Image 1 (cartoon, rainbow, N blue to C red):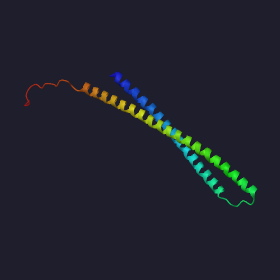
Image 2: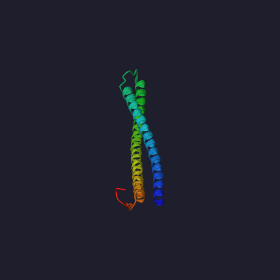
Image 3: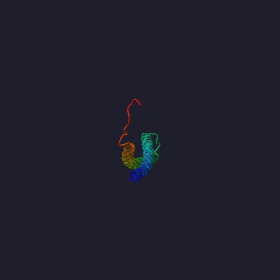
Image 4: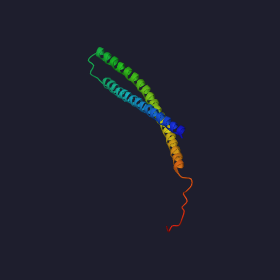
Length: 143
């Protein structure tokens, strides 16, 4: 019986450890999602800026037009780089979400094992306290 209780205590400790790992994985996944959202917003803003500057027709001379085109090309390079960063962030966020799901599955598996162990201990305790033989009554019910 002592070995079963020690095993239950180990399983409960392991469950707490797995819960901490799950919480850490969830926090990392949240940070990755936040980074992804920031990068997506940056891609949107730089794309919009580039489109707005490309649509401008107020250049006074060839030099101003040339500067506008160089500036627009620079914005396009920034947008392309940011898109690549956002795609990398998406892959990282997906991986972190998968890690969080795996951590939850590991925690749930340990929880199930701990519950099964607790049921086993309860069953053994109940069978140990149940009397195996009844007390025989002597005499009659009239006394």
